[in-house]
Length: 397
Image 1 (cartoon, helix red, strand yellow):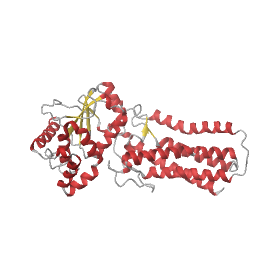
Image 2 (cartoon, one colour):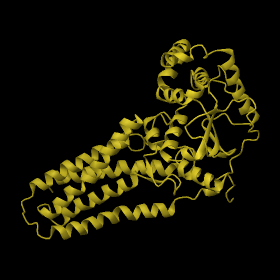
Image 3 (tube, helix red, strand yellow):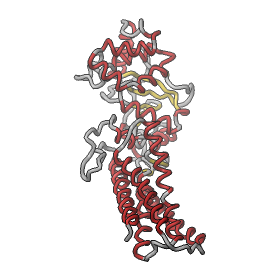
Image 4 (tube, helix red, strand yellow):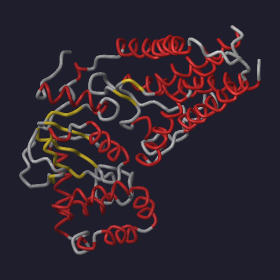
């Protein structure tokens, strides 16, 4: 066995390992519960920071981790066909060895062409991870590295071949391509067939018992003036809320919602329902959103973009955190901290008390019917599509 062939098999096996663990992480969340993430190169170790702010959690819960989310709860994880592709490459590498085809130009040329798929996919996913999500995942990086290693080793295998026979390459290319499609299609179809049906949870997780906004605390957000009236309970410095916003935007369902925000900062400097400050500066940032009023969307977007900076600054010096916000929105200086906005934020919290809302963000109510908390991440597209289609009616028990 030649060195480049050995390298190819090792790289393909590593790709199977990394993609396999990524698939396992995804599948473990299909019970609608919270689980640790295997964000490590070391077998058996899990992410030391399994919070919504960790890179592995961000990439796993992002709208780019799976496809067909509206049809299947959570969708089909991208890592699954990735696992199948690396398994196919490993199989083709073994074929070169077991059938003495390391000099076969047809077989080695196809092998080289086949490695372009994981490489191009890795380039695309890497761009989304860094440029769009601003987060990295160790398992993802391992998969990317494996992709480039199989390409490099396949180039070496092809270059070391001594045979020149290429007759019948078109036929072999077609057969091998069909074989590769089968490798990917079979596990994907099996996964889709075995995916859990959670439609019976639709509309069963509670309602707003007193939805009337007599104190005018619900703040219109988004650009949609029509659609299902939606109340979103959120904290502008909450990483999960930021993640939800990204998933909702990617779902394409925003156009069916007339969105309103209920500010619920997880910060005990204004929220008496929390015993500790989970997100330092959240009260001040919530006041800024309320002060923004017609420009609330811009303030929220800025808060999401600068969450870490504001929280870290507020933990050390609340006045410095306020200065950050005022620097971005100088027109809000007189409003933030004023008795009027403090009273309005307090009334927002009273609205939450009146409706017996749990101390949790985000929470979503569509026409007063709650989207289950377990459906605000991986199951968002599926559950929200069902909720909109059913008009909030309860699913079958």
